[in-house]
Image 1 (cartoon, rainbow, N blue to C red):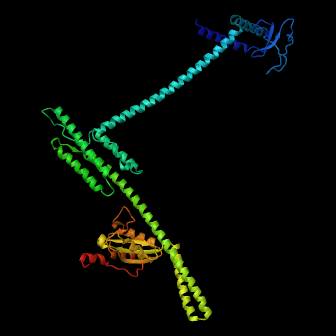
Image 2 (image 1 turned 180 degrees about the vertical axis):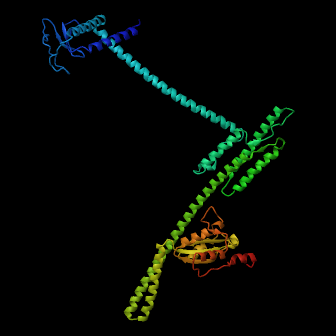
Length: 490
């Protein structure tokens, strides 16, 4: 038997001996070391209390336990029934322990305990190493699966690239609403290519009287033409703008027709489902570009509205300061006339003072009521042609200032005014007119471009439907600059 095996057997025997000793009742027993006649067992271990002839450390005939933890000091009694059997079992256990001590000695037993603890520690370490190895194996398996998936994806990408399908940056990828739809379209495109349903060609073509060579020729030509068509589709997507979707789709359709024309000999063509998917991909790009343009236009219109609001506030503030100054002059002059006793002059100044107070009240009302303002209907036949009007509003104190700004250097001729009137709720009135001619709006992307294809008479009829009292409305535009330029009279 090896030393390690002998150690394990000794540890096992010692463990069983300790388990048997642990069952011994507390009391005096023969000293297992044979250095004393008796030694006290506290129920779990030997104590330092001994009895030796000539040296009476403890009276062996007084069954009183030494003071220790868990010992009450009360008398330990031998069971009345079965005392002989109990004594016999104690004697057997004592003999077994004495034999163990004679065989190994106390020092070797302590060494065996240390060896047992070392073995237990080694087993625990081995279990920890095993758990670590298992965790490392699981991580390696996961990395292997990821690598295999990446390899599959790379192979699929390489396969698609043979047909001109690349994962290029699409404009709609950054769109929250269009990204999912675009991903679905791209998946369908790749599925049709993988299933060889992106093109259609003859299946009984022979080359050099060989059907196999004919099949290879058809496959090569199909791949070449599909690559050309896909390259054109990618270019169309990259160059499409918000307003040229129709021309981009027409360009891609011509590419499809060119493939069919060049592949007449083998009946080669791009299939209709595949062409629809590529057109859908192109449409998603255009829709995203339109959304971006609309967002920019809305932001620009908001900035313009803020500038207009600041101008209105500045005008109202300046007008009120001017009226307050006039009111102060009238009050001073009125006081002077009353002091002189000029009754008629004082009466005239009171009327002017009342007008000034009314003007100040009007300014305050305009400042407090953001919905009040002037609704205007204007046209510019020299710039936009006949039967095109602009319907808008302004909160300026002088509404013609806004009309003149619209006719600045950005258009070749000045605007003609058909109607210009004040309304307490100009915002609602303008909105109703816009809704009335919504289907005739020229710019359907930027709603701040308030141009409509309508005649002045139609706008006047719409105002009457809104029960708006318009004191003056001009149906025919003067267009003096335009007409003079067209006649060559200048």
